[in-house]
Image 1 (cartoon, helix red, strand yellow):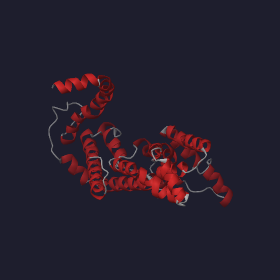
Image 2: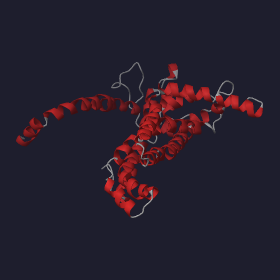
Image 3: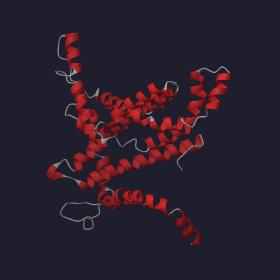
Image 4: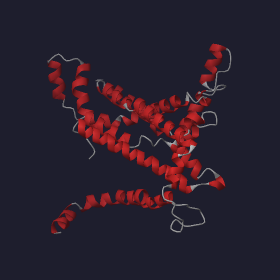
Length: 305
């Protein structure tokens, strides 16, 4: 006890800084978990959470046996896998490429330009995409009429095109900002290693492969594990704003389905059902991050725990 008191007195200023994020996490992440019991009850707005009757696993069984389950689960999984495969390597490649350029001014200007799209709001981004791909007034529509002489098809109404528009617009928006952590990791590379490699006649490409990449590999592994933990949690805002009745077969995912069942159905809102569906999604994410961490710890030496 004396040791704890001495440690606290020594680092009390650091503990004071830590207090605010701890309170934030407790209030906004842990306190709402009390409401998870709704997923195991038949909750109505007229009853409190505590007075609603227990129904056990009924809501989960209802979702798993629903005709919507296959569509929303497969759409979520495919879009998430596509987003990881397309978006995850870009910041790494960008950081390695830009780090190999010796001109500091060009590198800083390029970094600043690529960071800017990240700060565009999702609503504005979707509006830009809609304007560019509009079949009548957008750049896509004008080029289509110029080349073919007729109005092109509406890409956002095509279910097979929706995943590509969603994923690659996200890649454009975030790859620059996501590369910051890799630039930070590359700053720890010793210049002596590059100098020794140059003396041995190694090209710039070989130095990137054998010096730079191994340096950031632990960071890449940790970021991939964290990304796998949210693989089923696609951004609700962007998908919902890009949705329409024609592309719904490809754009309906768990997050939009939860919203429609819980808040978007008017008088027929089913809070218990939507809570159970969202809890199912969280369980899948937990399984994914645990599996990714186990594989990483088994294959290599880097893991979260």
